[in-house]
Picture (cartoon, rainbow over the protein chains, first blue to last red):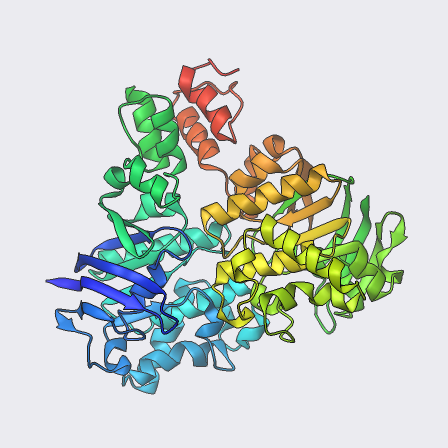
Length: 267
Length: 284
């Protein structure tokens, strides 16, 4: 069963700018997919089709094997949790806990259930102590974590993360990576947009490279990051240690620190 | 020269200081990077160096903070703004909200300083070209992506041509190409004699572009030195800063006995190529 399927999706903004020019791919349930490419490549426009914010100008989008066309945003919200790049587009309540509880309450959870899910999600993102704080008193990187907790509390089968690591320090990036791994081991589907190729290489099964509204490459990280032509067209550089191994002429193309040291030992 | 001597600062009504015993010197015409975990006090330090603290935020500042020998706390806000440009962390908050085009937004600061119209237009065109946002000049500031907004926020400070530029995570919204562009602009500014203090999480880029690095931990400067000295320091992870993947790989290779303890830890691509290209004991 596929979690998500894009079929020849085209999308034009009212201004006439064509942001997506025929995108087709399928995401199996439980996959961790990273979408990479420059600003303006169409990445955010594409994933905003998954929760019904956008409808394709032509082509079709399927979530859990049903077309999104004609489905209400509220209905899709039970299937797709979407963490915006800018948390201030998402956060609105006057306490952190109220904001995080809103999603599960809206999906019909009891007050107790919503509260316990919200507290668990806040603990996951390291903000349990800030439950009663006004979100505006938190830093931007903390507000990003509040937005992530809000989506985690909804326990949707599909989670979309738009630039989840930006502005996070080393601990914050490790926390987001842990969330991705935990979601995947719970059988949920994770689709992340990221500019951090090291993060994509280390924590995702598959990488889709986009440029100018089209998919240029699609496959496991080790294959995609070896596609020099597609990466150059998308202005994307391979992960640092992957690039270093290639530079040194090693036969392996490691994706992680451990993989790199293994390759060093084998060379 | 920016000089802080034993600076402490407490926000209004805050129970504990946000900075304490901070002493640092930033030589003119250099790029200084500041790293630190979230909550270490980076944004507060940026505002002190820019003269926004205590003038705008209130609170209690102790010790002395000077730019070119002048005490920041005694400068008028207009004087402070013409000496130090501050690019704040969230570009959406840097936008004035008073102008309907990107061009007007970038010119806003110059307008307030009474710059003649022709000079203003030339200045805006120049910084827009430098940051490759000329095609955005006639658009509304509210119809921009996060990355575009960040470049506009940087342009609105560059156009003021302040001798000192303080930037608080200026590349957080940018893609890798945009990030490289901003750092190359910093190199250009440095050559022109501008002093840059940049607060940033991207260690590899600081290594490549900064002359010096400062580590902010527990509200004070915990370590200062060249990027190579600082980034190889064992204590960084304890301060929540992490290490480049080159350093992490070398540490793991050391642990597994694949390279000797006498090999200096690499912090950059070139240093790592030297260490791993030749193997045990073969580093330069």
